Length: 262
Image (cartoon, rainbow, N blue to C red; front, side, top):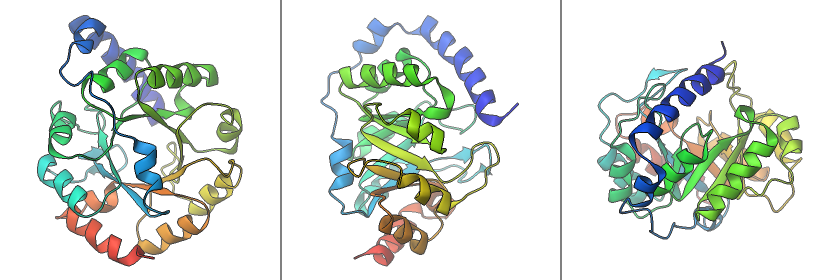
């Protein structure tokens, strides 16, 4: 079974279990549910095609444990201090090792827009994202039918959350040209083979309307690659492993920022 199919199968069981523990009414009574979300898209656009979405990620299926015993409070504060436009916080425990407290700790530590990065299949998960103080959610084109993505996008918007739609193929982009996403991500890494192909992403970006806010995801390992993507229409760069594999992720971000200054 391909990794995305494994994740989807597990996530369906996980969400069904969570629904039995906490109702949507319970989620809507959470202290953060009624906060006004920060504008994720505007934060990206404000950085003039150099917007770093710095990710906090403990492990991944392809790399295993990336940063053992990572201190989320320390790392996200460091990301904020070193100019990240926004943050992505992994919210999946089974495959990415997220702790149940990770998102809450990040939200309490910074004033940046936060992307709740999970494998969303159900409206319940969007209610959860709202309840823990997310500003945006990730929807993955490969995981759901087109119309289901549209329904979940509308649902997120009703709650005041923005949507980053992740794509990887020409067909996925063509399928979603009329989906009301706020930002569109092109994953440089094939989730089936884990191979990275930057030129593939650049070709796909050219299929998108000029007004689309394009985010390059995964596999960016140096400033030169980031600048090449920026020159080809990408506005934001979601980077996790590049920072998290080092002893000091925030320092790695600082050094990158120096290299990509216009």
